[in-house]
Image (cartoon, rainbow, N blue to C red; front, side, top):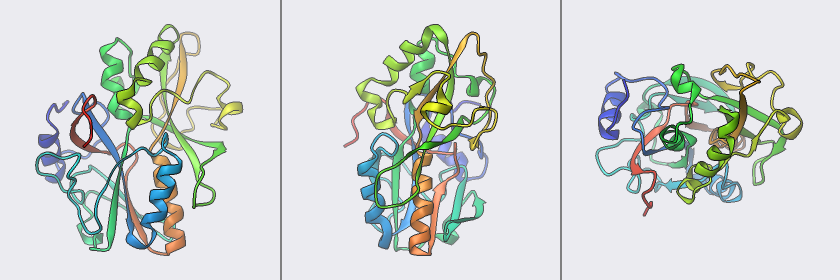
Length: 269
């Protein structure tokens, strides 16, 4: 089932009826990655986002203790319950994956919402570009770029990319569409398209060996792998932050986003 209304989707997520990846859901609406950190380390994460705007385009930073978005949600929304799955880390280690984080919430937490490439998938489809992970009912494929380290206050944060196989004759069109100004806040055009990804990015040679998400079949004769910046980079930074703070951090589970009430061509005020 494809939801058209973000409020209806969030309601069903909150009630436990929807726990899947949000790719393809609410076409035309912006989706957001999420990171929640203690206030004591939040300023450093904010700096990380500013230094890495393609990987972590900051859509909204909530006031400390707030779990309600004012820029991205126009109807009822609760950050603690309205994502299909969350991951909780402590001292850099994953301790659990849950569908509700109320028991982990405290008033000293700061929430960051970052742009997500799921937001431009509908535009690609509208131009006849197939999104194979959607067709196959899978999460998007995501990889660590071992050759690219992010700038900023946290050490050893590896850039994460998402990959979509694009038909050879549509690669330029995909670059044009996602390079439009409206998609700058959701990672923009691909970082790289082609088969020299191991040399250029340091991505696994075997694309079936994903680091996050699901492997997607690719036809090497007719398709080109295109790699976009990915907000899971923010999860990597949050994990490093939790090591420094020796405290918990909470993120979305890769592929399970906060679906906003803002259209992809709408300005975020």
